[in-house]
Length: 346
Image (cartoon, rainbow, N blue to C red):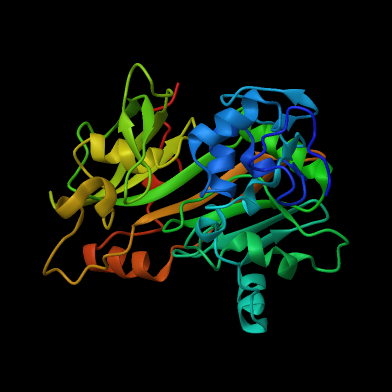
């Protein structure tokens, strides 16, 4: 029997292999303890703290604390906790490989492609990354987007599962690093289109509201918290309205907090149509023949190219939003939609 490492926890020693996992670009900025909860949901926070205190969890060979903010390329030493008693039954289910049909559909979503970058039009309902109950997600299907390259493309940012629109992928490690840096340094210009229940007042402006994560049985939720929250800033502009019933709103997040746009629209008193998580019953228009799907679409993205210049990509509206626009008489080619923040930002 192999002897345990000095300082090793006898509960885990000898129960499996030590793993070393490299932090992905898309996980940049995550706390170390939250990284563990995503990858090993069956391991309690107390156990993670103990493994950190005893030096069994290390980052780049160093002892660290739970609140360490991760950077792409960091190497995390993971003791054999996934094999420890009581954890295996709660680890994520095995991801299913995409079918040929799914792979073909994914390739058909490509909006832009060169040697460094791929941009796709992510459909609503497709998760970007996996979780405890998420068997099918984009990250598991990225081999379908190799297009002859030696490496699979890499995620550099996220969209909510129920949101749609422009999602950028990097085709090389160098491109991934530069694109991720552009997002961190706020060099990317993102414009979302949403349909809200009610009309925001004033019709254009800025929401500066700190948000904090609140865990719960229905998944994490963002709440306003000036003390513990992180600053979140969103510019918005109403483009067209359907009386007082609904509005077509352009949104531009300056920061990239989880569910930021959804939480900010709800804060304005006009939740995004279909967003029951933040708007409850007020987020739906019963009896009007309107889709109950989330009406939030990453319409366009402009970001520095990893080599030179900029990439500008626009994604068409998903089918359910096309139907809603037609129902309310919104004109997707309206002049006001071309530069919705001309009078807002600055």
